Image 1 (cartoon, rainbow, N blue to C red):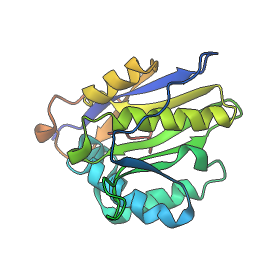
Image 2 (cartoon, one colour):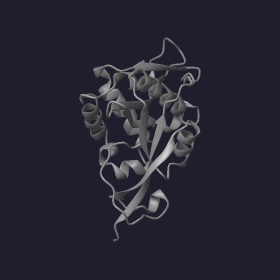
Image 3 (cartoon, rainbow, N blue to C red):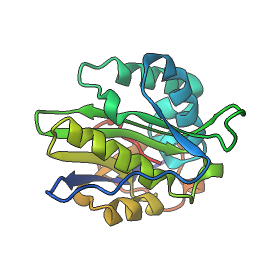
Image 4 (cartoon, rainbow, N blue to C red):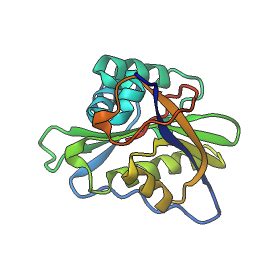
Length: 205
């Protein structure tokens, strides 16, 4: 069987002088800020968000709860981990009801001027409500508070909805890359491309 590759985009956001829009969650949702006890909750949301997505085939760590836990643990223990960029969103329409985690984002400082979004995940039953946009805006506010000038993320080209969202928010294409697919692409839509790309953990849903 021929080796298959999937196209991915590196997209960058440059902070200007204009203020960022407020990261507004829909009614019934709330933010949960980072603390170390949330590693498992972030991991479960990450797994649920990427289940059945092409990125789970590109990055095996996203294909199991244990893999997502290891990934979150590794991200959160890095020296350049940014707690102010790492958030959960939870569905809690009734204050007396338990919160249901439904979206996650994490970020790292990559240099004195650049930051990177590691993963953006929204579980399927909560998509289409603006949570992805709110997550990215919340993260951008954290990057700006950390005095970074630029932020980059990586996204699979087949994730058309995410690519459109990032472009609408001001992210611009910086580079096109190709990642080897470990599983057949038949069920994922579209042909592979014969190129190579370095391994990266920056998958987005």
